[in-house]
Amino acid sequence: MQEGYIKFNCNWIKAGPVSQDYARKMNVWRDKLYALGLIGVYENGIGFGNISMRHEGNTFVITGSATGGLKQLNENHFTLVTSYDLEQNSLECKGPIKASSESLTHAAIYESTREVQVVIHVHNMEMWKKLINKVPTSRADAEYGTPEMAGEIKRLFRESNVKEEKILVMGGHEEGIITFGDNLDEAGEKLMEYFQ
Image 1 (cartoon, rainbow, N blue to C red):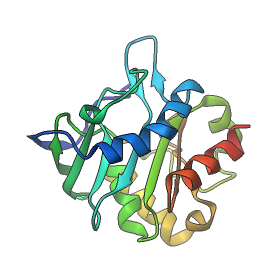
Image 2 (image 1 turned 180 degrees about the vertical axis):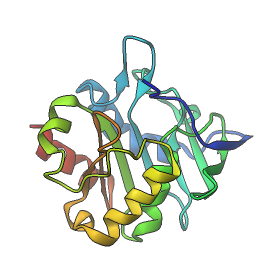
Image 3 (image 1 turned 90 degrees about the vertical axis):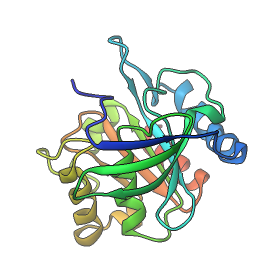
Image 4 (image 1 turned 60 degrees about the vertical axis):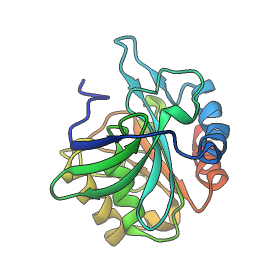
């Protein structure tokens, strides 16, 4: 399992924390998802799950790499993705921590539709098995954190009703599910609809 490993070229500009406001808002849902085991850490120590919020344009604040296993996050566990290149599989982030290994997947969603303000990525095998190919699903040969996955996200926005469904299954990323919305509650509650 390659989970949790950053596959893109990351230009990390170490800087002070992002606004406490972002951390406070995102932690409301992040804490709930952690409590439900949708964000967490595997027995091998690899963390999973992340959450992001649009900043300006296609820049966004996202939970940092390897934070899945932490029960509570503070502003030092978030970073700002300032630029990225999906085809070159690279990004630049600025903050106290490197961006999540899933950052380019989040970037592809923000780039695909201006309405989305929040992206949530969780892991749950039961839900994944139940939803695969029933809701918009990326191809099985597109691995997380790759240009292929970013391309699949863009394809789903062109060819499926993912924009209306606000949920997708990562076919090539076992357990991986993404929801999004124009605010935190919309993205979180969409996930809860399927988790119940």
